[in-house]
Image (cartoon, rainbow over all chains, first blue to last red; front, top):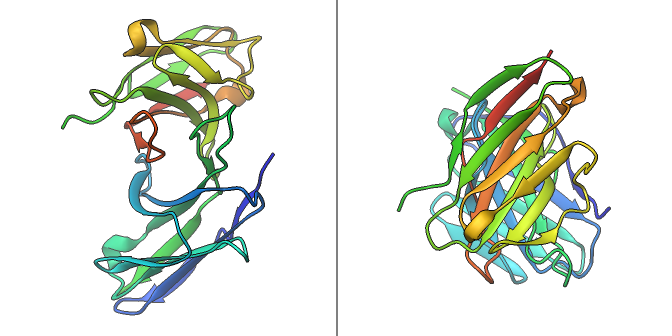
Length: 114
Length: 113
C-alpha cells in the first residue's frame, strides 16, 4: 500500500498568521497531488491541485510540490477562523490498474484562533 | 452544475442486516468512486468504475460488499451482512474521464449497532 503521511495535529495558528500543512508520499511515480478541506461532519472539498514542481497560488492558498523529496505542502495566508478544518492530502499513484483513484492521508486538523 | 448526489444521508442498522447506498455522479463524469471514511482517518477507496466497468475493486471486502453501476450513470453500494466495523461515512465521488480531480457527494453516515 502506497503511503501518504500527514501530521494529524492539531495545528493551532492565530488569526492572520500563515498556516503551513505538510505531506509526504512514498510512491515516486505519483503524478498529481491535491488538497481537500473537510469541515467536521461534511465531505471533502477540493481546494488545490498541483501537477508539477514548484508553487501554485490561488487566492490565500499556495500549494508547493517537490517531487525529488516526495513532499507537498499547503500554505494558507491570512488564516481565518473559517479555515479551521481538517486538510487532507491526496496523491494519484497513476497506473494502468487504478487509473486516477486518489490515495489519501489521514489529514491534519487546523485550528485558527481569533 | 449539480454536484454528486447521495442518499440516504444517515442510516442506522443492526449488525447482520443489509443496507444499500445510492449515488448519482456529476453529469458527464465517466469515473465514479466509492470511498469509506472511518472517523479520524482519510477516505479509503473501495471501488472505482469507469463508465459501467470496474477499474479497481482490490480493497472491496467482496464477501460482504457489492457495487454496481448500471448504464454507466447511477451506482449502488450494498453491504450484506453488516458488521460493527462497517460503521463509517460512505463517500461517492466522480471525475471526468481522463481527469484526476475528484468531487465528493455529501456522504452517507452508517452506524451499525
